[in-house]
Image 1: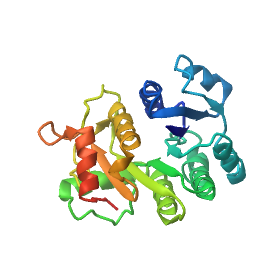
Image 2: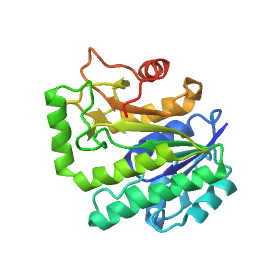
Image 3: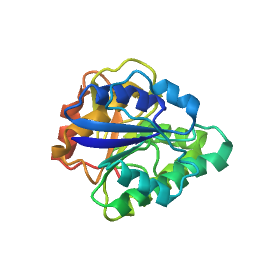
Image 4: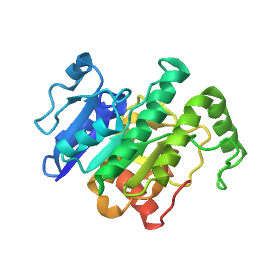
Length: 253
């Protein structure tokens, strides 16, 4: 049974993921959502005993403190879904989305044998890095996103690169496009996909993470997986979409 830490435990994606994990006690022995303040702990009430919130400020915790937390909780999987959320300017974006992420990656590697699932962003790639499968509309949307929040993407790119370069860690990077609050559809496009005019619900992002956790036999390690809901006629059930990406070892970076 898995023991999971969720960095950014009071965030929107995490809040959708937590009840899914809590309702599967056979697969998940313990889930530790990390929150940075006591008032955020209140949002985590009402889950089963599987969910054990921890007061832990990622922005200020050292690599050693993070590693100690992972060892003490006997965690085997870390999910990074934390971020500054545009609050606090560039300084805080760097502190959370880059620096804290890198420390948690290093902490996970130091414990060895751990899984790390990074929730990144589809547009988090070098500005000149036009994906071979994109058309002009796709690239225009990518550039628009880069222009809107370029510093955020720079931090995410650097954090993702650090993860990919780190030894002694089994990683998967989930790369959703523009996020919406709509209900889950249970269907996504995954892998080398067109992005123009597309989005994905946060609830479907949570379901993708759950599918990766539940089906580790699918061997998503070492893959960057772009995800969007996409047109209804091209989207697949989530487990099927992830299984195809794994079967073809289709990575997007």
